[in-house]
Image (cartoon, rainbow, N blue to C red; front, side, top):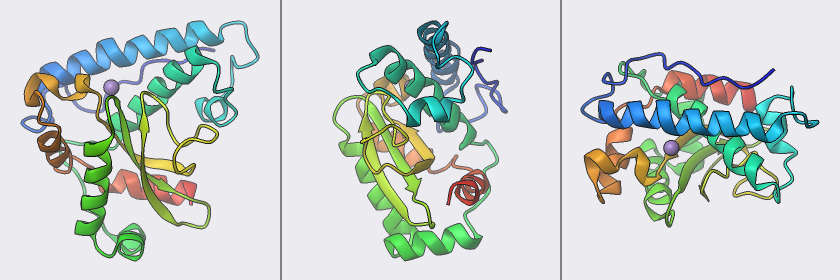
Length: 201
Ligand code: MN
């Protein structure tokens, strides 16, 4: 059993104008495909082969750079595609209440998350994570690390992730990472995040 590049549930152009089609196509068919191929090569014939990606990352030997970088890249992008939609559902219900509890309001959550994404130096990710019991936390990570990995950032279960590598926005936004972060909020499908929250809390 090897990992497969997930199909997108929408077309490359369908997130425009927020995320452009050329960026989506290269990001999915080149970058994510590359992480997937290299992850499979890194685990082939090892005890990791056949395990879930979550288990591989949670029990990761952080000195194993090939699995750390490519396993992270495989998981992170799979989550990233899934939390976006051309017809996104609004935030409601228990997760909305939990965001208010943790951050004060949705707007304050948006500020905290956007700041984490904007200030991550170099390549990396911003995350909304849930801890056991339901507590929410925002953090960021470098490169393809994520909070499932031992000792990384807030060590919760990531339920929303934003890719802030330049390959995620440079064609359309050049150096304007904050504009890309603002645009991302127009395509977040909160019904997916709510399901992730229920599953992980
Ligand atoms: Mn990426």
